[in-house]
Image (cartoon, rainbow over all chains, first blue to last red):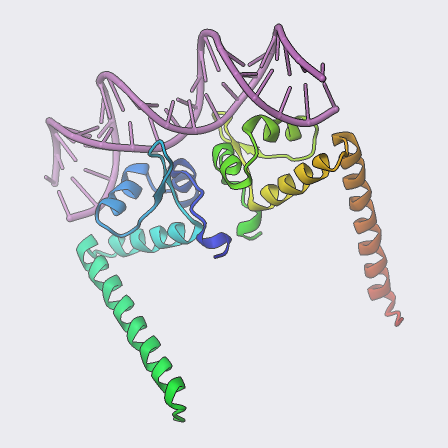
Length: 98
Length: 98
DNA sequence: CGTGTAAGGAATTCTGACACG
DNA sequence: CGTGTAAGGAATTCTGACACG
């Protein structure tokens, strides 16, 4: 776990860094595209990684993609990553050369 | 400029991450040991680097050093770094081999 | 659908001061 | 000297809703 993944940034700072409104940022969470952590009090905390994701999301929306499409694509990417990982581990386990 | 140096973390999070009180953290600033940025509204924002510094400072205080000593030592280190840099640049400029 | 906004409240942070030692 | 704390106020964030299109 590196700095990039630590959830420590408040929404105001994220808004400032990305140029997006807090409304937009909260909406992406509503659509399950990002998952900030919360303090005891309920304040959202984002990581630098989240911020990069947010920027990508907003660019895709500008290009006409729906949040639903973006979510779908993200899920697909996760599945593909998983497949690749499993494949890699199998190869390692059986010492297969390509 | 990397993530480590971006001033984006509020004092509450710094307190949580370091285990120190907000009072202690603000005091170190008072003694010129750290320099957070401020939002328009005046809220302090720290970097991960600041956090590491803060931890080091608190450890030195625990060992009996005064904030004044710590400040002095820090200044000395900066001067030494500068010297080393200048020396390095001179060597580079004149192509001196050691 | 994605975003703006006004509303009311709660959490967070700020400063200056008093206290102890 | 370094830190705790209560005080009052200001900045920040939260949620749910209405609006537009």
